[in-house]
Image (spheres, helix red, strand yellow):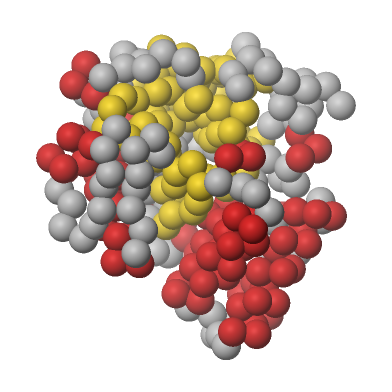
Length: 262
């Protein structure tokens, strides 16, 4: 894709945010688009948000389970940016009107205490950089109509990022085995999904390593204080006004997202 096509695709996605109306898949208009093109479209939007006063507060890793990679026909995860306006307080009503097609999924959030810059980052490097972990709920959303997304579409759409709710009980990394940490997801008091940390690339820590080594050659460093969402431990479930969603993660406690009645 040339620069004009990249800018046009980014503008269409930004317009979807503004109007609340999803667009046709990017790949439909640009079947020649590559993964590299999709990240250029994503970066174009990030520049727009930063110019508007947003601040990068971290990153998310998507497509980090074998099932999702098989579904999307890819052999690697993807990533998106977490901006300051995406973070919501636990137990405080979240307006679903701010999203187009929201779904929610449980994750183990890393909060960094040291910078992490690839390439060459190892699991040991990543573990040393983590200050603590938190249970988290990620609100995923798509600006692509009916979630009919290819890998190009989701990457261009900032990896389908929507929002983040962090739990409030920090846990040191050595206190929990992330691979074996079990997770239950309840919506409106009903158990809707179960999973474990091992579903995320064998361990969520592997997703942090992948992210650092992927963005490092692009000139990005994961900074102290940044939040990294490594990927979901269960399937994502749709959310509607009035829903209350609770994720309980073994060894980490729980996190609750409450959606306003509208």
